Length: 191
Image (cartoon, rainbow, N blue to C red; front, side, top):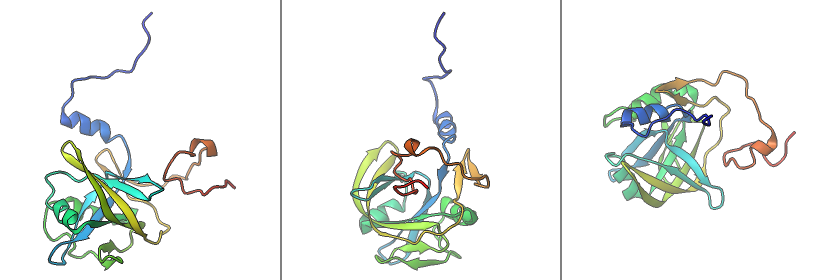
């Protein structure tokens, strides 16, 4: 009897690939910076993650066709705003094409003068450490310089092409299952 294996295909197009990757639930961030004219710039980004604790590094992946990324790269710094569930309109505004994404969005300057969007769960201000090729995207490595306050709210999640809420109670797995997760926030001791 032949061993059972999962069904799959080696022939797929970009739509099928996007659908498969849409099964992975992500948070939503807005990456911001300032242009040469000191006007705020930014875009919605779900391809963001922590990379290293020591040194403190993050990555995000802008499209190579982005008009905003070259402005950020020239500045050499960016701010990652982690959106709260109630910021769906902010996400939609920054995810759509257009030049005036900050219209009606309240923000304050970070220590480097970058836009920190009000009511975000947290933010991290970074300097560009490295930029790598990633197919039709760039892989941007940033070094964290300043961490924002962490608000107690629900995150904005993106799943299967839409927003998702975290209304269910949190389930915490055993400590040994989380040892290698870089974003584990439970501290060194379990209660």
